[in-house]
Length: 211
Image (tube, rainbow, N blue to C red):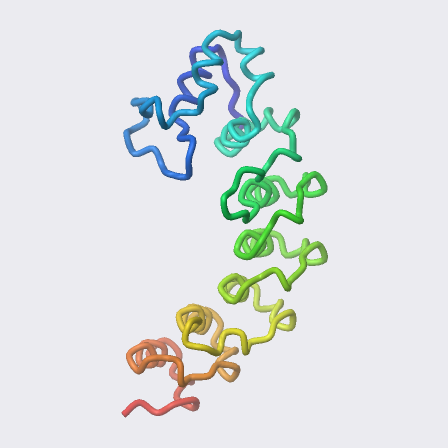
């Protein structure tokens, strides 16, 4: 069900509980965040009518409200202003909107999506594969994607996972998709993890011996 604001008081009440960072509000549904963690727009909007407050919404706050279910705010969303303030750009806003509203994919800035954000989109909507530059996926994103979408295996070089730094990515991938076991360099997998894996997939015994 699409949410809509009934009055300015409800609007202020909702936006005052949205943190202006990536943390989660743990104070409870009925408690406002400390002022220093609120969007500055909370104070500004208190002087507006509801219509004015919605018309002047900053893009990042509009995005948060859309994700919360106020989908009518999509109509005036400035897509060019999404994901411009990230310290480490990943395309979080664009990816979340594509996942929720795939019919609006043409409005998104795909060039801003990187690594696991691209993975999240493809896991939800594999039909967008032709829009993806698979070279932008790091080994973690690669392994994460194949856990749900093994059909993309031909897009990657499995050797990028065959080093000590990626052993946990291999473990997660093999639990979900045992058919890739022959591509794994098992020398990087600790004996305890091998035992764990072989309990799940006994057929792995052909690749190593547990003494």
